Structure formats: C-alpha cells, structure tokens
Image 1 (cartoon, helix red, strand yellow):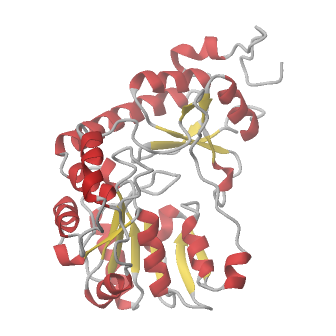
Image 2 (cartoon, rainbow, N blue to C red):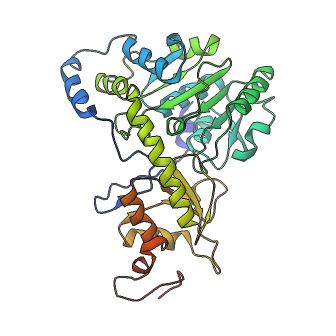
Length: 361
C-alpha cells in the first residue's frame, strides 16, 4: 500500500440505513442479538480501564471452539474486514493478480488494488473451477454476497488442494457461514478463513472477528497483528456470543424458514437467485417492460423500507438485495415490493393512485 494508490481509490458502497423512519433491509445483519449480551458489554467497562490481555486468550479459546480449530491458529481482528485486509496485505504485492469472485463483496478488489495488485474476476458459481495457478491469492466468499451462492465442504476442500498445489493462498470469507449448518474450513492447510461476529449476532458496531490460518502464513498473520487490536468490550462480547448455541440454532431455523417463504412470494414478480444466506438477490427487470432499480428502491423507501441497490456490485445492472429479518418485518418488505398478502395495499401511493404493474402513475 502506498500514498498514490490509496489516493486513487474511492470507497466501496455498502448497505445499511441510518434513517430511523425506515425498516432496514439493505444490510445483512441479524435483527436479534444473543440474550445477556448488553450486560456483558456493560460489565466490560471496568476491564476496559486497562489494556486488553495479550494475547487475548479467552477470545482465542472461544473462537477455536466456535469453528473447531486449534487455538494457536486464531488471530483476533476488529471485524472480518480487518482479517481480509491482513491476508491480502501479506499475499499480494505490486503487479500481482488475485482470483476474485464477482459479483461479490467489493472490498476484496479494493484491498487487492491498495496493494498494487490487479483483480482477476470469475463468477461465484464458477470460482471453484477456476485455475488458481499464477495468482498471488484466491478468494472465495462462502456463502457469497450478494448472490447467496454456497459451496459443499468437499468442493471447497478440492479447490483448496488445487490452490496448495499452485502455491496460491486461499482466503475464504465466512462472514455468513454462521447462518448455515455447514462447517468452517478453518484450520485447513493453505487456507486463511476470515470470520465476522457482527452479522450473525446483530452487532456490526462492535467490530469483532478473527482470522484462522496455519503454518507460515498463520505465523505471519499473528506476527503482523497489532497489539491490543480488539477492544476489551468487543473481546468480552465476542466470547459471550460465540457460546450461544441456542441462539445460533434458533437464528438458523428462522432464516431458513423465512428465506424460503420470502423467495416464494417474491418470485411472483421478480427473478430470485437461490440463496443459502440471510439475504436474497432480486432481478427487478423480470416483469414485462421491467422497472428501474432506482424506482424500486424509491418506492420501497416511500413505503418505509430500505432495500439495497445491488447495481453497485460488479456485473449487476437490474438487481436489488434484501435481507431476511423477522416474520412481521418480512411481511412489510413483501408488501412494499408489491407481493404477498400486502400487494394491494403496497400498490397504492400516498395520493391514492393505484400502481398495479409498477408503471408511472
């Protein structure tokens, strides 16, 4: 990373609305938080009067249990993105290429470019068939954001083996893995796993996460980690959350059931990409004549709901992304998008004119 490179890159757009009058479906965070988490956070205040323990043993132990890996392989980070940055910084030099999925999380390409590298893009459903040879790094997002595409453990392991044979480190972003029953790839040889604790546990502002890596790369990640890089409240909260097995299972059940229900309703009007994540990607140009993304986003906003304009993802030009929230909240989304039991109500604007087909009124 250098001055000229950093000056030449814009910020990547992301979801999340800070408008208190909107129900936010633009960010993929759990609307629920684990029981007792607020008390744990508040109780951490006294300990925050001192520097965090180095290394943060309790957090590393909880993380190792959470993803079933060796404690020594866990590298605490202030969020999953910090783990991604650390892995990219160690793997990519100026002039290198990195194999990246697209459409996917825009920060992968940005981090590669910050290091002077160049992304080599491949579709998420084809990334495990791509040749990692000659690339400084390969990245898989599992499940992928924004498509919701996920991968079988055996397929990931085969790709990891090909990456090892090509001497190409594999970074697997598991920010949404906790919403699924599939095991982590944490601890696999030649693999760096990045985990965020903020999505599943509904605490994006806490900034807690970790990387998992073994061997030389794992040692380099640990050596490069700044001391005290995660706050005492974030460490304490993370330990508590990772041990809430009942909460995790309840969240998975709710997301699975609601995602299926929402997808069926939304398919009446939109092309819905099959998803194994806590969000759905919709092509809003399905119906005859299509509708602009701007129109869909604006109409939803007028009805009190924020959805994500997904045209900011590489390769998408007629899509929005919506999170999976609680049942009653999801009903509001469906009504706002003109499907389900609330479609008739949602098709009426503030002036009382009816918009049954999404055309101008």
